[in-house]
Image (cartoon, rainbow over all chains, first blue to last red; front, side, top):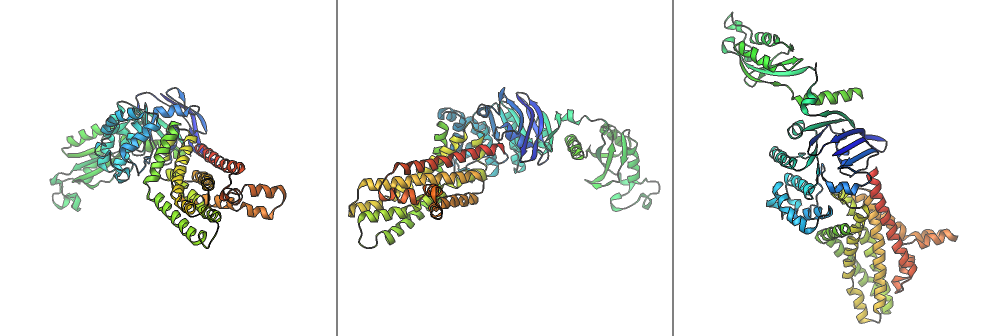
Length: 334
Length: 241
């Protein structure tokens, strides 16, 4: 278990973190979420015993990280924002060096190396010089050095930073594999990364913890206004609203599609207002402000009105809403 | 000790792999060879005088080479973010500094050894003893050790390699002209300044003439220890900043 109490860090007179207190249980995957400058990296560097806190205590696996940093370092694998690589070394030499630094014998490293290369999918480039590798491979080498000594705790600071979409998916899969054997701490400002990887979130803003819990726990916030976007295909007999045709041009009895659909959507319980629609994705997109999750009621109302529902979702994800609420609150309080 | 040797091996291999190290070694040996040919071998002179002149010009190896071999040791690690691997491993700051320092000292010793053909030429064609050559090289080695320690300290201050090399050169330069400051002072202050001088007092008056004085040895060892200690303390302080 990792336990931080009243942890704070000042750079000169400027506060970068804290005071913050939190606990991370063994086997958990916890995401540190926050905007740039929120204190995520500072918190992780303190946990990895790279920095010493200005105040507060931190225990990793029951060991005081300030009093006995060496003991804690043996139990932690750390991938910083920029992987700590030596460009002049080959991948296997570098991993041998990293393992030896962590107190492993050469024989133990050589035994462990095939597993690490397999997990990180580095087998093909094991003999290559790190300086010649792509950014994605370098990031993998960074992960490999963090797990070579089989640490109990794994700290990954922005592991998908600078990766292309394919590499992001690969890194996400790698983290899923690592979750099986490690307690993992991941920092990111990319919400989807965090939501897809972590069991629990720790939202940081301006050096303080703004919220702790699972995504659903953090999202449970009664009375919040949410935006739902609904895309509906307009029946042909209603005219073509996309070209500015009004139904009156064709058939006097045909309704105005924007007004008619708006009326249908506005009648759903929980919908406070309906914004003017615009064309998107082969239909009209309506933005609804709601006070509760009424997506099911909206879809039912659209089908009952014999309209074609093309797309229905929150305008922002649950986590985005939560994040904006928490961070926005922090900004307001500052 | 194990961590020191692990870092030592990595760092020494980095020196041996780096084109910069060999280009620097070639340039220093070239300059030294030209100076030796142009000034030390002029006219008919006693071979002991020629050897003295050789060591006078050879001191460019520790003075310039020491700074240029050490400025990157910590600054480059910070610049390329690899320092964090050492900082988050169960390794003490002292072990980091010593591992890197001894690697630099080993490469410096290789560099000194490559210049050995020149005094051997004097020995073959003149009347000098092996002890004179040893004394001179021992002095160069100690002076190099001190300058490398100064360079390491400068390197530990910043992540800019340019700033590190400038700071290292300025400290080394100032310590080489302390005897000049001593000349304009008087009394015990003058003595202190003169005894702190890196080049004139402790090298030219002793090792360069084939004499090994214990006080000169102690001086260079003390300077080395002092600046390595400063480098260790700087690393420690950076964690608290």
